[in-house]
Image 1: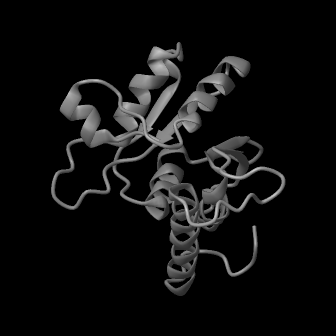
Image 2 (image 1 turned 180 degrees about the vertical axis):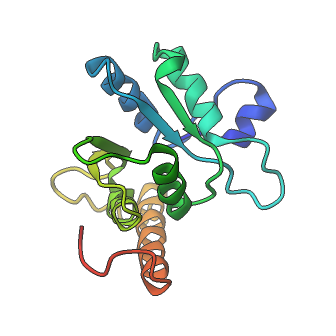
Length: 172
């Protein structure tokens, strides 16, 4: 939901599509004042890795009123698989704890599958919806192409993780 490189470049949080993931996390933090908030995300860049998504996300959450002592930051991960592995290692979730996974609805099947396969039992909390109840076809438009791009990326990601044995073989 954030562009960590642009955020570093401009010295302020820069959000991109999916910013409601961070906004909804702040809403949930207010609704559940005793909940801990984990923001997971390092840098997917292969060269410059000093800009971390978790740092920018934390800056936004702090600006939205989430107290610093409630925030946990996982800053090492470069992809969804590592989000799951590093988050589980950091949190060490205990039986009976309830952890919500807040991410884009289109990204939820891959994310939940990877977290659960890593042994981190999360509950899906989808946000950032891209279509309504009725699938609206945009034809050949920039929005339609963007949606197709997102769908192809998620399907390729699911297939790649499944072929590497990182995702569960069944639907989640």
